[in-house]
Image 1 (cartoon, rainbow, N blue to C red):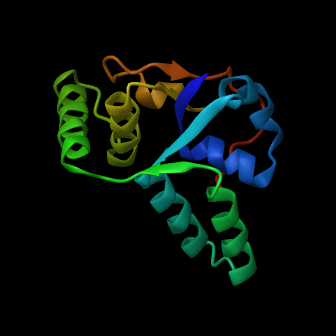
Image 2: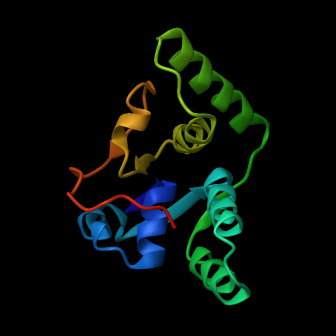
Length: 141
């Protein structure tokens, strides 16, 4: 089919085998799954803050092997700056991590799969694939 950038929350749901991922499978199956370097950093930060042991960290590393990771380069930095600036000028600032993830999808000209569509609503030109929120409590990795 193509490729999609996968937001941190969806990667977390997949890693934990969270039932909330069910609705997203149709957006993921048959696509190449790409992560922003920022998603990897967010997951590593979560593991550090939660003091994951070596076994769980290794399981996360194995899980991440199923994704291509797009690392920052000069063009991504320019795209991030544009995303950040446009959102700020529109009066709807975007979190820095979300701006990196959105910039990755924009630069690659692919959709972003996220559970938090509202976090990206201010990003001009970004194609977002999401599902209605469930009543399940939200939790990160």
